[in-house]
Image 1 (cartoon, rainbow, N blue to C red):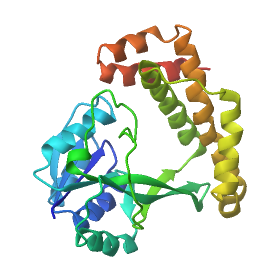
Image 2 (cartoon, helix red, strand yellow):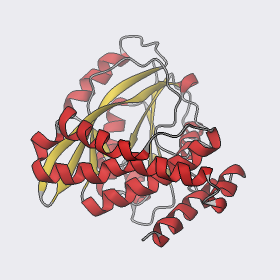
Image 3 (cartoon, rainbow, N blue to C red):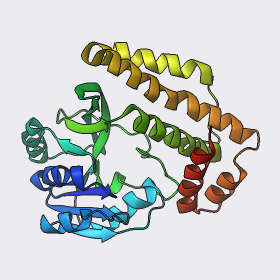
Length: 276
């Protein structure tokens, strides 16, 4: 069984090396898709024997499709974000999985989100993501501009933990959540997704992460502050969706409808700059 691997990166030299080491440890071939970095990330990838492919940023769907095109023939594909790495115990689990003649369309791995806030490092939460995907099921399209855009599919769990450098500052995480929320809303509007009560989303997800996922017990007040910033994503995306339904963000809607996905990201950044 042949396993291909890839990572999409920009200016991520500080975390990219560990990510590539993880991919190389379990994959037969690895591609690093570079979205025009300027910090030496390309040179780092090449120094590690990884093939680097340049790609103009047009969203996650287009980037993942380009990475798949760059990979040679393989049975399954495994991908990490540039700020992720496999935990040491995951290596033997994935190697055993490879020897087990897997056949499912996808397998979900636990992603452990780590926070480093004010010198305090703690595990914020663990959630499961489909990261080992059979080649014929690993289909991304350009309109899938946001993270984790694969359709839902049967995906058993594989206990091979991924460690994710999730947050290094409250402000940076909050800004990213707002940006992702608007991107999600643009795509959701095009798909005709239904609205949910925005006011209920933030408290529900705050309770989920702090209590059900245990962030509060591990991170204390830093975890509570982070959860408040992260939970805004879930209310903001429905606030934005309501505005779109009322005719708001016309340039964004037009750019998405016309397939100008690179401009969608640029316009979202402009919207966040104008936001109070």
